[in-house]
Length: 262
Image 1 (cartoon, helix red, strand yellow):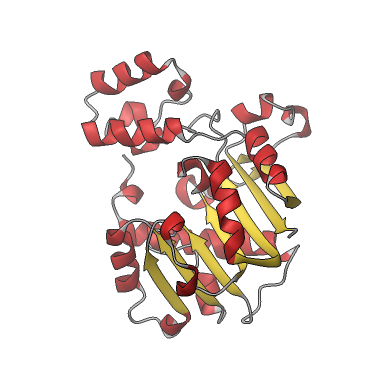
Image 2 (image 1 turned 135 degrees about the vertical axis):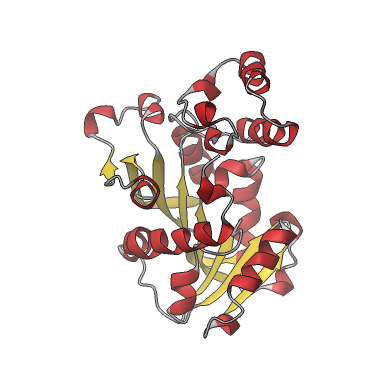
């Protein structure tokens, strides 16, 4: 397990840097970010991703099922000059009452959709919180990419740096995790990620079937997030590798802006 996964404050700060440097410019090619926007991050954790939006004066909702992470987020923002612009809610998105929030102009989800069970249901459900023409940002790793199994959370340093082994048949995958002494909690977590895995093609199919249009798409060979994690410069996926199914093995993250057509 890398230090950044145990130091929540460090992780919080890193998220804000990535949003500011890479995600906001990406989104602004489709919609300008102004203080008039109502923005929601679903699966926000401690809400590090939305720091730049809060600082820009946007009204921001952070929604996460983890009460502990929401509590941490409130602690991290307690002295922020714009803290009144942010409302953090500990709730399952499927149980969130529409009266608790306004309708959103922009939904932000980075490294989240691959953790949500039944993504088809999610895209149908989220529409009730959107205005016609609302935009949605998604950033997520393809399941088949080298670390699509999120094995970086393993306690074993060897496994945390071992690419592609999450693609092994399930009994063999689970056996390796046990062999290297991973805890029951870690194994359960990794099994859940395996159950909710999503590919690029499946994501696009779900999006179009639920009445969203893709306004912008970029696939990355080197994730923008890797600059702050590993000092690597981002690199888009070469055209040669952008072939359905093949691209899933090399795309370390995908960025999308969608539009609610309803």
